[in-house]
Image (cartoon, rainbow over all chains, first blue to last red; front, side):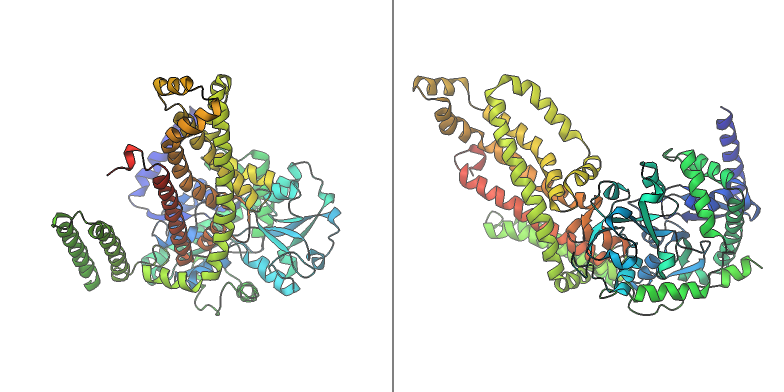
Length: 328
Length: 281
């Protein structure tokens, strides 16, 4: 009952403030979870209100492509991985990175140790699970760097499976290695009763093929509108405040995420652990994109073997204009 | 703006032409009956092209038919690979196994009252399971390749086929069956000479429903894990890359394959059940 009252009071409060505040719709890349804690914290702690913003956070999911939502006008700003954003840009949807709250990549390949894999070179002649939907690009580029073909099993090739969004292929031993995120699937494997010492993991970050994850992207044409730019400056400032608060108070941030999870699918232990891992990835970013990280992402994507993700160096795919103003 | 006006004009022209054809003196000839849907289809495609270009709709939302056609023509080898993997192996394999098993089960059900009361409700239950729930489980059981897709298709087509065949086998009247009895016909003689022919319209109904189910099942099951080939795989990865023209090219393949498959079944039905009232006229 108490919750209901607070909810009603909040709803009234936002409805009252909505008349003056500017509306911003944020599309998340995935379902409500601690991966997006900064935005939920900023909303919950009133950081957006302080900036006179009324922010609506739309959760994503396996059937939602954030790039398509923003192209259709369903959102002002979206959380997306850079490979997907740059691929979209080349396809004629001019997305621009305005901020990069995530400094490091959380993606890795997790393998059974008892298969005898101890170094990346041992990956040849194995069956590997990979996420597609735009997340396969760093993997393809890594394999082409190693000189391993992804066309099928063999001395110099690997069998690639399109992995669903669960860890069963590894547990069932249908694949020797699968894609995992440090903050999510890796823990699902451990939760299934597998010891960390039975696994060997290769972080994309360590292999030099890490691409930038979870940046904030807007449509290029909107950046010509000073009002929109002003709105985004305030949005980025408040969001980064949320992120830094979440980093320092991971348990509270996880609780806030749980309160916002309408699906009720997330559990407290899982979210607290996830927030702990997420904090490691956002650490070291003040929100401004590091051009060196961007260059590395672009070269990773262009080195994708026979079928590169992007064929020419993108121009104007990022801007410091928003973060320069927001963070001064 | 010119293109949008042109689109409206083309739409009106198509409408006018079709209403003229339908009311005209030659309306009942075969040629006109084929021409009317063709005119409609061409009008839709032309209006689509003009509207998408005129309103400058982003490729990401809806590609123009010409873009899709170019992509279709330039990706023939990939499309053929996907077609072979998904339709020929997954959908057709599952269709043959599922419909065959359902037909044999229907005969068993027909012979045994025990099975009719016990098995049909279970079949009903299996048919009600959502594909998003069964597909990941079947991928777990049968692996990533087409076998798990065929298993999904079997689960989807089995029940409609079973129910239709069981209903068909009960189609004969008591009088007809009595007549067979007076001829001293055995069960199988009566079955092949009387009851199976009478059941054919129902059997084909089940077969026709199953064609589209098989296609949908095989494509959607690939969303839950697949090797790096197949129509479902291509559709889901191309959406991620915003290559919507590729998605539409796959949709064209699926539509053509589905129509051809359904048409083939309808044609076989027509030759085998020429005597049935539904085929006259």
